Image (cartoon, rainbow, N blue to C red; front, side):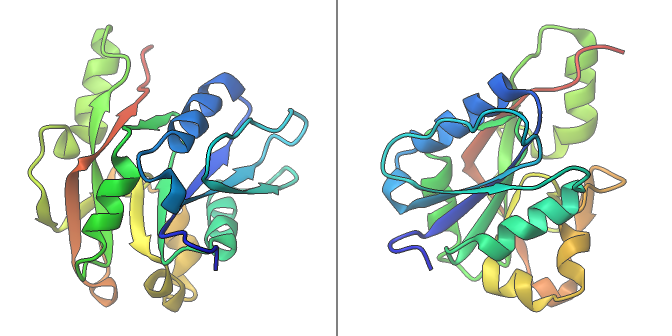
Length: 206
């Protein structure tokens, strides 16, 4: 286990490096950076490594293509050292208190904690419509507290519980066919932390 790490942020890095670097930089500058571990799973290995800074520990995994998104996320879980793992897409930028809010939320007995979202590029009709369809249920301001449904791609879990699902861990890490999924009863109850805000870049072209 990473010494002092209370949260492992897992990001699968694709070929759009400038966008992914913004996410990594935002993670490095978290208010809880000293308690944070970055698990960066790079599936675009031909590109240079992304830069990290500050006190957060960084674990950098390079996976040769073809590497499925779900398998790459599962590899991130296996390499994580903190008791809580939090997934972020490489186009979902966390607010400065994102990690701090998740650490606090996971002191409660929630199996999974979701985030509140804002649209990072709301200038077009397509972007606004796409955000409402895909993330409207968790759009800020959303109430914190118990939730039956959480967003699959950007979500946090207690790591031991996630690993105990064994065969289900890879399926839970895969990109869903829908925008949300009800958590398995074996995973307990889920919650949303409004303070764990993220700005997500949304499709802007039809």
